[in-house]
Image 1 (cartoon, rainbow, N blue to C red):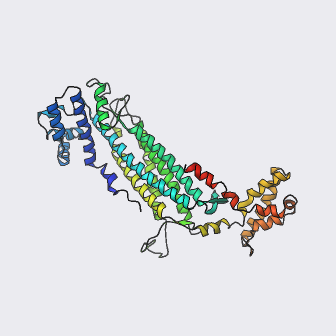
Image 2 (image 1 turned 30 degrees about the horizontal axis):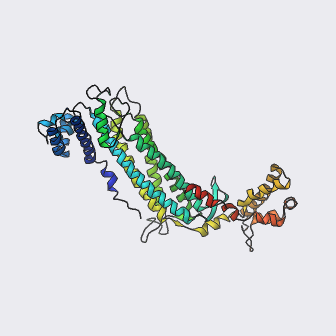
Image 3 (image 1 turned 30 degrees about the vertical axis):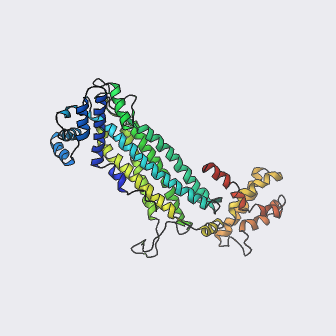
Length: 442
């Protein structure tokens, strides 16, 4: 079971202490920058760096009067200092502190999410290779199509999550920008070098241009990347839920000793983790709309985005972190039943080989339309036989479809019995699996 760290780690990155810690980092970086630019002397700079601190209870008390969290925070910090406190937040506006601090929080949170994704990718890669050649039926519209392998299914999951990882890396780059351009973004009260120095000290880049805020298209990109990741994770969860259906039963979630599936029905083993993941992914995607709506603010800034972000940012990162760890554990412990996969593969009496037969006939001079007509009429005969309760395989393990084709005079005029039987070879469908895997897991 994957437990990279306590699930509280991500939550702690978004609690009140983490928020004020990030604000203080920005304010201290600003003091250092002013010191380097010659506004603050070394002695005052050192005092601020050494002594500046905040008290959450005190901030809450002050905010009851100020109704302004940044002012309450700065007042609490100033109470830990002497006269040198006059240089804290000098020539800055609230959003200079907040937006740059939130960039730090999102950057660090994305680093944790990327660690989660790496663990998920490793689990998917391991299971894909484990079942690389395990035959199963491929389905489109929920209907049996052609033979594939379970490893191929998992490799596709891997590739999709890998694509999501690339979006997350881009999102991390997009969000790693600070903004210290002042109240209207005109740098009237501090030079560009002030912002550049602060961002350098914090491991961020200065925004090329900003007004009173960092533009919220950056935030929207982060939430969109998390939402796309969630969509791909739900794809996996929904597939597992299908595989665990009693009528399918090709794979199922690990069911621990003593676990209960139903208060009423003792036999139940339900895909509860997959269903939970599905729900969490819905929640993650729901954050995209408010993030996009936060992009269009009035003029140089309004405050409509603030209340939204206080919810969606911590909730999105905490939810994504929890969901990814849960999905990784699910994949690592997933129970796979190759014998049921093979049973289901034979369920339609060989119909999964229809295209293989179809593709042989043009080489014998038949048009595609003529070939399709011959193969389809035999396939329809098999569907009818199955509806009437006939066994998909006879005592010789020959399928209904094979027997129907061997009984078709038009087909036998073009293909020999040996040619027809060769079309019912599972190895034909797995011959390129190694090459596919080489492309996916380079």
